[in-house]
Amino acid sequence: MKPLLVLLAGAALAAGPSAQVSAQTTAEASAQALAQAPARPGVSGDGATSAPAWADTLPAPPPPEVALRASRPSAAQVRAVILTVAKGEQAEPPARSAFLNCSPVGGSHPSAEKACAWLNRAGVDPSALRVNAAEPCTMIYAPVTVTASGIWDGKYFQFRRTFGNDCELKSAAGALFDF
Image (cartoon, rainbow, N blue to C red; front, side):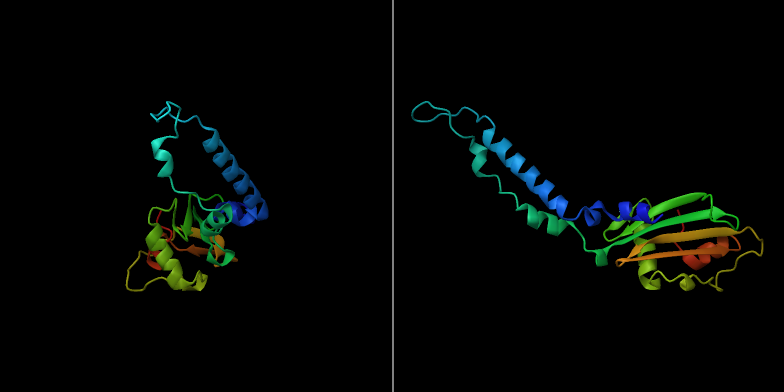
């Protein structure tokens, strides 16, 4: 599960220094292609071909080092979680699963903002999943097992919990496992 999380958390973290070399090579290749592109014919005093009129208006791309630094989050900023819900007391096979990215908010979770807010409040602490007594649930035993594993602020975490039924799960976790 850990290698999958590292992949999902972002290839930029695992890319390391080699990404700078490939980005620099790509930027250099783009600059060479732009320089070698044929100019559109224009009207000049001597009838020769001139540079395109739009060539002066293009902004220069940032150096590769700056672009990589801006796009690559540090390990302390990574917040990516894989959530699963399984029917029964076993976590395998999951009935459904979702990927949740909280930095920036996104992923396959349908309520990513609400789920990230819940995780921020709980601090990814499994003991924070407490059934709310104010929300009545039936006493029918239909177990539901949830798991969450991922990287939160640069640290790997994993937890698993079995609830008596779907109502107890929704009461305890709100939108976190509602997918």
